[in-house]
Length: 160
Image 1 (cartoon, helix red, strand yellow):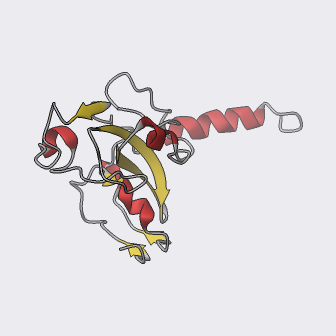
Image 2 (tube, helix red, strand yellow):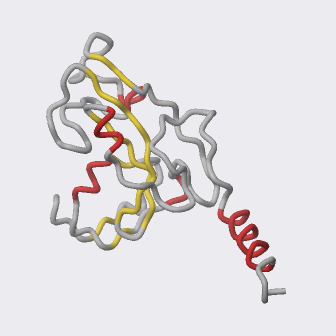
């Protein structure tokens, strides 16, 4: 899939997030995604579900996970470095541009070092990798942001 150039899951309204591994598609230049249903959507800001920051092999079998809790049936390799997951994995959300859309992405990392290596999140989205939940403060929706930028621009010298 690394040579994928166009990604069009537009009619998949039940998809709320995508796997971080999609960023490995280095040839991807165009996307058509229905962003209304996405976690952190810039228009409505639906909340990101809470993730467990670290899960150890003693807590769950990495080959038989409940997708309703972990977002996947299995975690075998790191979303960031592609190395085999060892005794624990770390989960986080990040909003990242893929093709022409900003997508909420679920990261299953082998270590905090890999989480630290994540790219900078997209502008006007949560500016760090995070574990979701009600305590995550999302930026204002796009209408509020646009109004704030207009007000800031009007207050600049020469724009009165």
